[in-house]
Image (tube, rainbow, N blue to C red; front, side, top):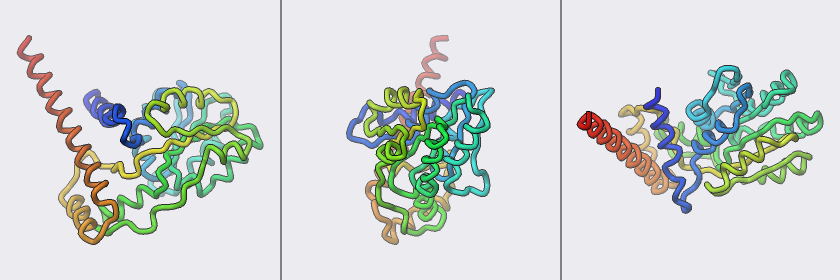
Length: 256
């Protein structure tokens, strides 16, 4: 488990020193994890945000975690958080969602304001239905279709509803903004601009996965160069870290 957590930490922090690259969604999930109370209640929507939450939000004894499960209904994260805050008014209730799922029931944020429910909504903002994009490519072998949508300023939306709104656009803003936002006593939205091309890769890929991806590229998948570059960079980072770990183990064994 420690080795797996080390891998996750390396993956979520691999781009933090490069200001020219978009924020990894993993990094946002890790930052949220750092600000959770010991009895926090975390509600997660359906989509790639589910994967990042499952891997990078560290649950501890005393916490609660809600997700739509095998039904995978989008839009559940926000109402789950409302219900949690009503049931447990003194506990920290956080919704970790994607922008696609949030927009489906975003009007319920006004309900949180109306009843003074100090929920925190962390939105991974990439203006795309991320899981659908990767399913179309990796499962069906087709180019993406109908997955992008118009951007919404969720921070301004939060303020228009009477809540608090924060935007995160740079790596340098993540930690400080998250600390402030998670301590707010009003319903709060934090929109984090993340890389729309970060793939939710499984720990191991089978030949069919790679074959479908190649087929989608051949059929005219948009952003082929950007997606290919992201996959390449991630693979290089993983390989480099593996070499570092093996070298460290070898040197440690030699010294003993």
